[in-house]
Amino acid sequence: MSWMRWIVGAVLLAVSALVIAALARGAQRRRFLKAYGRTPHAGWSAEEAPFLAAVAEAFRLPEAWVRALPPEATPMALYLTLYPEHSIYDDLELARLLALFSPREPRPEALLTTPWRDLAERWRALHP
Image 1 (spheres, helix red, strand yellow):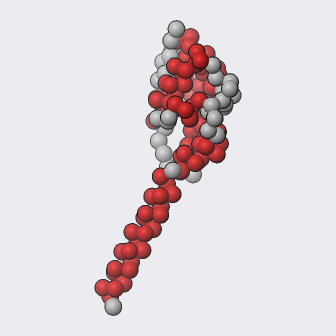
Image 2 (tube, helix red, strand yellow):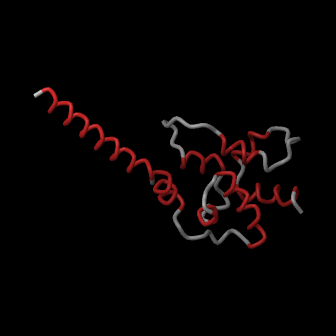
Image 3 (cartoon, helix red, strand yellow):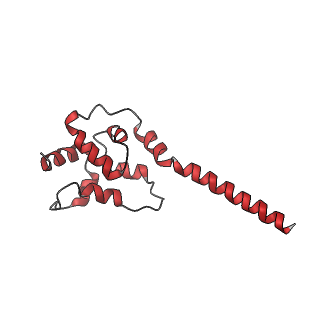
């Protein structure tokens, strides 16, 4: 009967791993859509498209998702939406975002709590 327990245990382990993988696969997408929705925000203009494309590249998100962000939201709010506080993650997305701005910024971490609208204006000033 011992070999039967090994087989059942292996099958249960495989099934639980598949369930966990299925739930984790679309978690970021579900959290983003729940927080920001799917439709592009009306507050973004056509001249801000290059900035939105740079943000999409920094966060490795589809550009349509970034267009759904409200201009008054902050990068840290987006980051905490994608990666909840209790999860283990790195801050590579935030480092790529800060790299879009001048390295002479007096306090670059302050940019993470600055609204997207203000960041777009700063970015356009750096990239005329």
